[in-house]
Length: 313
Ligand code: SAH
Ligand code: SF4
Image 1: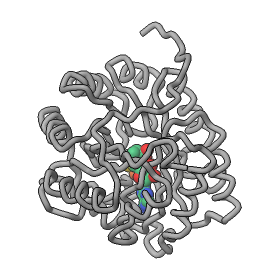
Image 2: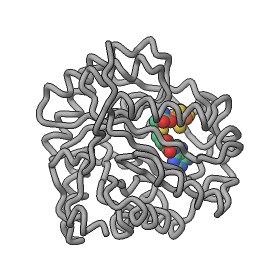
Image 3: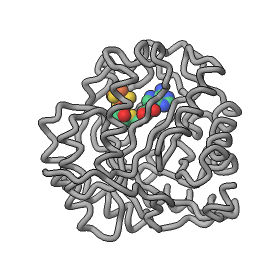
């Protein structure tokens, strides 16, 4: 099914993880504010632009700005960075900055951001509330609707194998994802982080994550589906297995070596100290060996949002 839509082209998105500061306390995540063991960092504008230049030179058609969450007061500085990123060349800019005010989303869209990734994590209301203290599934869903209305190509997804997630919940999550007007759908397995309340829980399973991705591809043939880095945390060729299960997108980290280990959402994330260009060249070689064609295209959705709401901003 993947080959029918995308052939063997794999879209490449370079992820710039520019800050590990977060005021949220999600139980599964190593960046949660309750984790006092973590040294916090935030990259300045120049460092972010430099990481983007490296991503472009390495053949990425999209850069993704990702971070923990912080108050909306910083929204204007993010908008300035987005316009500078767009001026670097013919690239798409994706944001993965979590929950913010609708005004901030609109500001960033007007600054030129093309896409927004906001994972639901799970649609099960009680599990969602338990693992994301103080937050509700419904509010997150409303934010997704706002992003779609603003004309972003919108992405969401889930963590498979979350502690407390039954097979029925996972099946329901896949159906809910398939119903939404999503351009991108990310499914990554849960990886237990030692400095979180879920430290002693069992990791998500590889076969379950792969099966969930394959089902998602069948339910939504044209969606952009990444082989998430969390797959590589379970096994060395995890992302390649994800591509074999129907994914068509790869999202290598292009975060500078000096800070990358600090972006430890889960163990194994960004653990390599190899320079970014070399890591990407190796990944591209592995993709080619497996028969894929790593593409520098922007790789938009095959069915763009037809009628973004007109806004006065
Ligand atoms: N702060 C933003 C974006 C950064 S977190 C947000 O929360 O939306 C990016 C993603 O990392 C989350 O959406 C979640 O799906 C994933 N994640 C966090 N902790 C994880 C863990 N322990 N195992 C697997 N995925 C995890
Ligand atoms: Fe913060 Fe996102 Fe991690 Fe939650 S998942 S603690 S919002 S970085």
